[in-house]
Length: 100
Image (cartoon, rainbow, N blue to C red; front, side):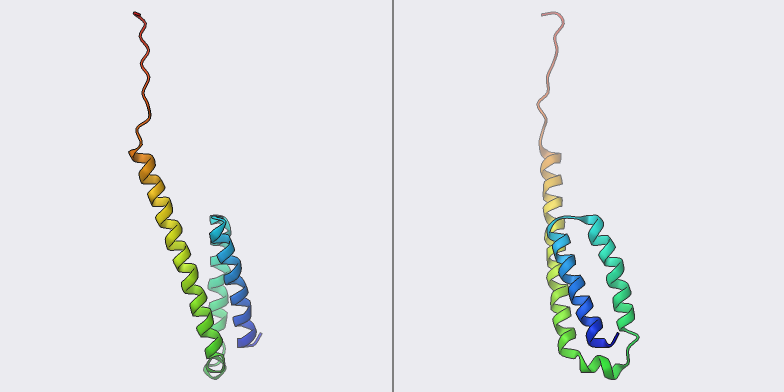
């Protein structure tokens, strides 16, 4: 696979990752992260000349990565806020009196 084809595959994976983040599928996000790491490692094996030829495409990939990072950060904040709300919510207590 040449550099352009590799970046197209990475871009497709990032779209899939974005959908997984939005659907809050942590298992899918983790699986995609492993694939993404391998794809970037493969991309680093292409020649510097070939990488330079796809610089504009790579910039688009960087923007897509940034969007996904923002989604992950937002999801993390939402989970943190939900946990905080649950921890601060007092459950009503009930007492049973056997003496009447």
